[in-house]
Image (cartoon, rainbow, N blue to C red):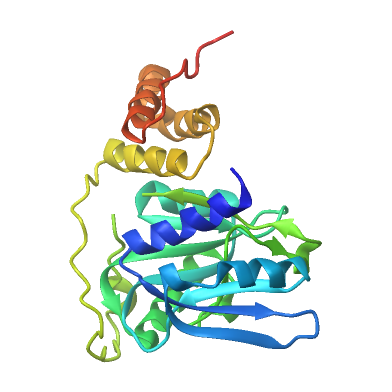
Length: 258
């Protein structure tokens, strides 16, 4: 998948998560930050961002400040831990370095004000070993499809997978009052939360993000082996074949022994 497709995949997932406005920023090599605040996702100046990135500026994005959003952010999570989150919840994973650090954008089942997002992020960072310094409620994450010049110019790539997270446990103590949302945010689309339903959603999300079917098959097989036992290979192969049809790809011979 090309760099622009990673950007498109990230923006599309945000739209599906009912986040439709963002702040975009470029950190130039001098350390100065250039901002574009509160823009519709379709109005983001991506050509400008690519030009800045080519001149070794790092490109960042966050849901626009001043709104309630149904999404929280985690920084510097190992790939295996991040992907385990996607097996249970609707989350986007963005790999920001070749050594494995990831950002997680986790969809919640309700819109949260910035102080509430901060509280939820702090609680989650302890559980997942994420960076505790990135739990401000309005922290910037890297925009996929751009180079990370802090890590020698490696590409920032998206790992995506579609059940919203219920933050009640994290917010059960002294939950801040959420100010009224300025957006018409609709309720979450009902999802099959059974293990097979979550794995189906995950497989479709990975294929939509451009990952090859054999890679997705092998990850699904590993995930399902304990639960499905001797049926795991048939189950994983059939799930990927159906997911390929669902996302509009021609089914291939998945997981066949050579």
